[in-house]
Image (cartoon, rainbow, N blue to C red; front, side):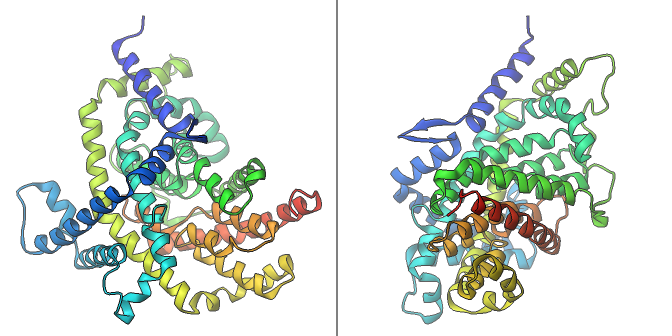
Length: 452
């Protein structure tokens, strides 16, 4: 007969698996719970989302001003709103810009009108806009992720997978959970989990950096949306398996790099209970022991209280910066030639693929803008009639993994110590390694008439 703590581990972990890892059909569409729920809310309650986000943006803006001069008796509120001057400025600017774009304020002003272009507004705050979707995904994820990571499933899977991950990737088995969560939802979820696990002592600094930048793969639901947008839905299994194959190759290569900045051998806080394997137990029994022990020491209240705090931190410290960065980059793309200029070195490479200078220039821009936001290259390339080009850019964008406005900001704000320059270097390494691999695969599929 199983103990009550083992039952607690099994019950709550099963709920987490059902929420994140089991697709089901709802309203004729096969998807996972997080995406079903986000789409359902967006489609049916969009006007209420507008009201709520309007209120939250105004509240964060107001409190950011107030806490410059005021100190609360509640330490958590101080940790949320008391920051350095640069953080306060970007938070205020991000919230103010969001209110302008959402409410179509100052449309007669030439400067603000740059941000009110229909394309920019719909891309950010429309019914299926980036900020709308990301806000919903964060909200749903933070209130469901404790079932997946807080009651022993991480310890159970991590212990069982530890020999394989150590042998081939020199990473702990816990990293498998991050990959699973990313595959089931999206890369930013994997980044959130990695940051949380590093804070709790599951990863060394180097391990956390590698897991966050190598195993936080874009999820199946989101990849399916990308494939559908690129009119590649009919070959989605081939499309996504190619992404996984490229990510596997890139991951193996990057894991061999020295990464001198991240060579520390210490944990962030503490070494997890039972980190050293008990040789008197089989792998399964030892994994079950660790999982049960975790469930014993975790209550529903503490797990969800911690998750609610993380949600508040994300909304207050991350979302304003995401909004500010995304909107500015979209304006730069829409109204300047900056990206056309810095993407010129890629044009000769893509001319070999397209035999068209115009298409090569467009693909070159798409290659670079994904660093800031995964949606941007997909939007830029979606009207191109060529399947091989769409396939190439789609796979490349999903394989780059570093998206500054999403997972990138999660990582910069994490305890891992990742800087903007670290993300940029990793992005460029992944990009330069991925281009020849994807080019050869695309040529192969063209030869096999998979792509026309």
